[in-house]
Length: 398
Image (cartoon, rainbow, N blue to C red; front, side, top):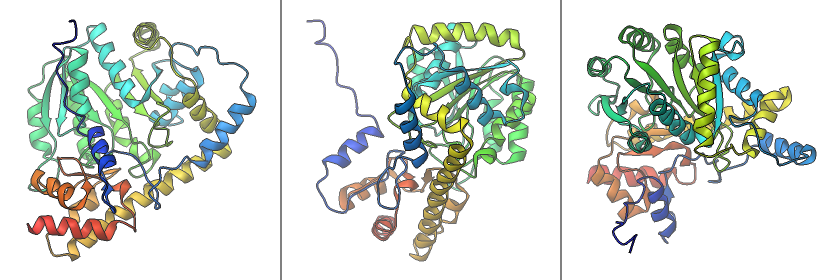
């Protein structure tokens, strides 16, 4: 038979964890694995601005015909405005082109395929640790990958000197994949001086920056979170940027992302765009419309845009508050100093828990976090904080 030799694949380390959680029948179980925002009640809400945008789309939409291959042009312009800033020439001067993709993951995959198809590079450097799908996408697209250190478990910080020392081994033309903000899984971002040093380094070594920008607005704010990306572009005329609206619009299942290719000039960008169309055409043929129209409707309307920014701030502030409370409560429990959590940003926190402690949380308390010790802070609320702190303290004490 043709398929008899196929072996069962291991479960996805994050989505597979959710499947285990759903099968767990214990009351009081807590899922802090998958990166999905939850409000104080434990629900993943639809933003009010999104509901209003959907109402307008439903009332006004006249056709379900295909979109342009790379998406609605105005969606691309508004995406670039978020990335580069409203006054940036790259928003409308033609030197950067944007392609609507099925989520941030789709943007990463299209970017990897584009690199291979255009012969831009054969090797991508990926942080260690990173989101596991970065490695899987690199493998499946045919890219070789190397790792650069990004986390020191002893100091709970970025070992920047070791990171740069490792990247100095990269060959001219290699791609360096960088988390633009809210690093997944550590929650640690470079400081302004480190961003500037990395930017100059990439230019001097002729390395192509590829930025994964999945959490804009979940760190310190829309503009603040774009500072690292913009620092990279100050010295580098070319880059790939994979951005996502899954988190900051709550559009997880609508799959709304974008791949932006930054070029040295308009003529190069036009050629790149013509090739991007082939990448999309041979992959998904045509992008999905509903989520893209939601984002376009919100960002192009001043009232809805202001409402979105307010709702985004509410999500960000709740996450930051729960992170602070978790760190303070763990400190009070007497099992160690967890003040390092306060310097982390975004949905995730690298807790410092070992694999054995993570396994004990799942086995003994029905608390599910990723094996690396990554906690989705967005899943914590006042109703489960006491149980979480008590369980973590117990497994840390052994």
